[in-house]
Length: 326
Image (cartoon, rainbow, N blue to C red):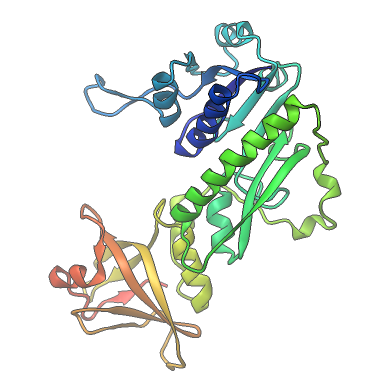
């Protein structure tokens, strides 16, 4: 069975690595990775003379795999080159939406690895939203592609626990490792012709119970200080380390300072203070009064500065007399 692999970021490297390692240690494993499709290289300086390869391309080149990098997936030259690889199966991990002419090209179809337990968290940011919503578990799903995004028939779902101190970065790494296992297991099942894919409509009762995972924009990342302690705590870690939650301090002259917040701790206490009241000793801590207690800022970053502990911030930045935008 000939396989073409499509992916771009670090998350997509681990499944490709696992597949190649298995292929090389098992001559009779029944499949071969014949090529990789990834995003075009990016310019990383203003002069436009230095290119950055995607993590998947870097790994593919190191392993001697042929690579295609189309600007447009509908380009006939690209599709002709892809067709020439003669894939029986395509695997998509963290890539772009594919036109039907691409995903329907192999005789066995195309399957995707998604970082949630579908049908929950369809969309672009499933890792972030699972933490923001306070879930205790999530997982990865392999499913066959069809027209509607993230709605295809499910092959395997594997659960991953979300710990109290996980953020989007640590959960990403857990899901990446599990994703390698799940993709390998899926390919082995397809090779053995033992796959029974389950329609997602058979996996839930009420459409209203489904949680979406829409793309995150800058305004999405703004902290709402009127939430409860746990919801704000989950929001910050669900945005960390990327794209990062943020808030704004305002001084007596009305000047606004934006601060990215990468981590916080929480304190449950009845304080009687107005929501978003700032409490600090101007040396070691900044606490924000919220419903149910305090949120303590831990790791923060001012525009143009490095990420730092809040105690380091307070050595050169006074918040005395400042208020928070709710």
